[in-house]
Length: 205
Image 1 (cartoon, rainbow, N blue to C red):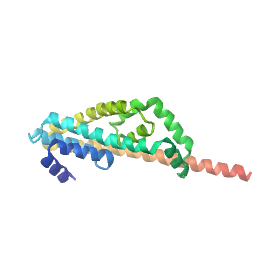
Image 2 (cartoon, one colour):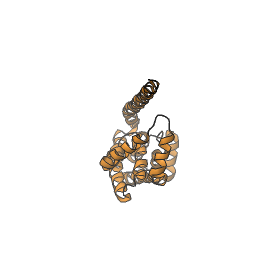
Image 3 (cartoon, rainbow, N blue to C red):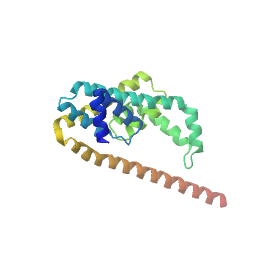
Image 4 (spheres, helix red, strand yellow):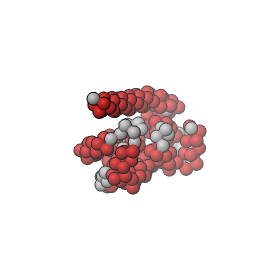
């Protein structure tokens, strides 16, 4: 992956980093924890302008987020509820509760969500479903992405040849997030299965 990123940046410069970050939003397995420090390291060698890297990577983050926003907007609330009704162990009430939570905390979620691995891609979809004002969504996404990108680009700039250390340490945090999500899913499934068993026992009784 690193060779591909290097080739992309050598060919297109800072816009190449933007393309990589946009793809990272659409395909979370492409980690920004690799792309951004590498871009910073490349800038430290004089092959790209540091300010241009920050601006272009932020533009890439916003472009990827907007693409997912429109996926959610096109899907819409009614289709989301219809899909929820067909998914095993998921209730329509789960979606409506999530919707209510997002309406209360959506702005903070979009801003801080840009700094959480995996979640930063997913949060754009409910924002689109709920039709968060596009200007507000874009502004919050830009601010959160600029902060996140600046930290990692500057880390790569500062570490130089050791830029990959960023990936190592942040990867640990990413694993924690993934583990927490997996645990939450297991708990959710366990609760739902327990509710089904209790419901059957009540009918049998």
